[in-house]
Length: 285
Image: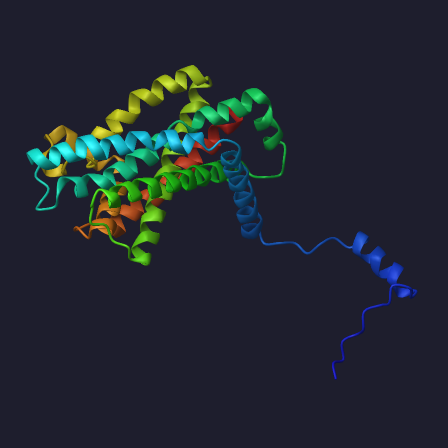
């Protein structure tokens, strides 16, 4: 038989004392990492709840990657103008379009945080005990999950067009990690710019000015080997290139430097979180 004390009956004299103890004794202290993880998860869930009220963003954003695959990919596959090492150009292009569509979702994430500032939401979040890094991390990984939904759409379109993609579950998990990490960096870059320029109009102008150079200055459309020297330098410091390299290696099985790719993506995301967190208070003034 168990030696544990029996729970007090509701009508016994011990029940009120036990209830009073629950009010007076504080709950056990959770480790800081658990608190931080819980708050990041809660903020991420709040961001994703917005999709339940308006799913049109997902539908409209699927149009551009579909056009890239259907028009650009099919055309350049026929003319064979870009050397891809024996890989059909449409197959070569598909991972780059996944990275591009994810970046386009994340790079304008700063507009949302400026809107929250104007609506007074950001000020209320900053007075809570939640660390600023947790606020930024929650938003960054919410952007990553939104981009992951977009990536699924692109993968489905590519599969319908006959692109030979892998369906290995472990490789697909690696694809999801690369999409989330890359999107986390670009959303933090956007929020960092928002903390500097402080207005939506300026942020939109800068966002439009940097998205295409980031895209064309990567290996999304063509191999690094065919680039001029100065563009190779840009590609080597562009996190999008490492994201595309990881996606291409995982989805197509082409040679890739996965350890380097993920190392750069993790470092870029961490630096982005630090930079955006440091400017969050300036944005809320």
